[in-house]
Amino acid sequence: MKPLLSKTTKPFIIYVLIILVISIPVYYFVVDTIWKGELDEHNTTIAEKTAYEFNSLKLSDTELEKSIALWNKIQPGTDIEKIPFNYLKKDSFFTVDKKNAFTPKTEIERYRCLRKVVYINKKPFLFTIETNIEESHETVTAITLITIFFFILIVVGLLFLNKKLSTSVWLPFRNTLDQLKTFNLNKQTKIEFGKTDITEFKELNQSLDKLIEHTVSAFKTQKEFTENASHELQTPLAILKNKLDILLQNESLTEKQYQIAEEMHRALTRSSRINKNLLLLAKIDNSQFEKTEAIRFDELLHQSMEIFREHFEQKNISVKENILPDIQVYGSRSLIEVLINNLILNAIRHTPADGVISITLGNSSFEIANSGTEKLNTDLLFKRFSKLSTDSNGSGLGLAIINEIGKFHDWKINYQFENNFHVFSVMI
Image (cartoon, one colour):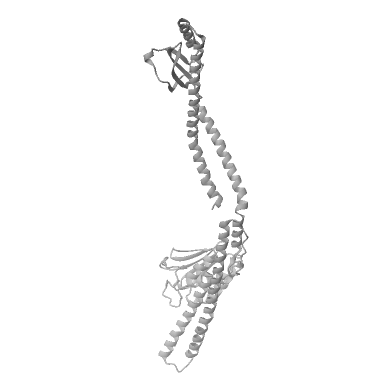
């Protein structure tokens, strides 16, 4: 997980880097073009000034030829050549690469050149001048170093400004987030969001106010429904079951009447159990349980095993225990009791007579394994009302409740079938 600022800063830095990298050749091209233009002006000025100085000397033709010859010898990079009138050329600017003959170390350098026709003593001369251009690699290096410097400056400044701005601009958002973290739907505590002059955060707080108000209202309605359903459904079921108990004790019942009443009694018992389980699932879905209580898991496990001791004996099931003491977890005591009881009851139902059940409790896991012959359907394993055995007394909600209790406590529940054993493990 990354903070929002880092996600926005990283693309911006990449964008700036790309732009600056692209700017290096652009800078070079612009600087080189400007430099060439300046050199062209310089060369033109030299040519015109040289012609002007020769003309101002008012030399004879013989003296002019000697002076030009001397000029060509003592002025490297320039050349004055007499041309006929019919050989006139337009001014031309060009760049050449050649070896520098005036330095001990031979290097290839660039020269900006000008060929211009000038008039000395009213006669045309072709004036050629070459001026060294600044080394290109030195220019590129300088531009690159300057670009890197400014990139580092931009990045450091951006990170500094982001850090400073995050403490002020994002303060209302962080306050809102802290308020939401402390909100408890069961306690229905009212949230008072702080005032802010930022439009987006103000709209966010207003939307959250409406959402929380609607959620609390829906939660109250659902809670009232589950409480009413628990009372209104359980009461008539209990009355019917009680009446059937009285009827079953009547000695005047025929055998057929007794069987019918017994079937009705079993159906009512199962209906009552399904009703309780559905209401339990509804309460878990509505987060109507606290999970902050410190609980000794090993003590609850021993209590549940004692309750089911008779069931083990009825099917002659051999129980192997490996339970570490003083295993403490945080959660809802009633839900953890249901989880343990449902896992043990599920193991008993799927264990054949004279089978084996192994119960293991460690520091971070609780495992129940029971002998079996065939792997359970993992697609239907935790689905509600899925029948994984021929036992008609089950409600089809046991494993679904186990799964929901695991989700409520952030525990992971796994199932495996290995070495002819069904293995249910809970990572606590």
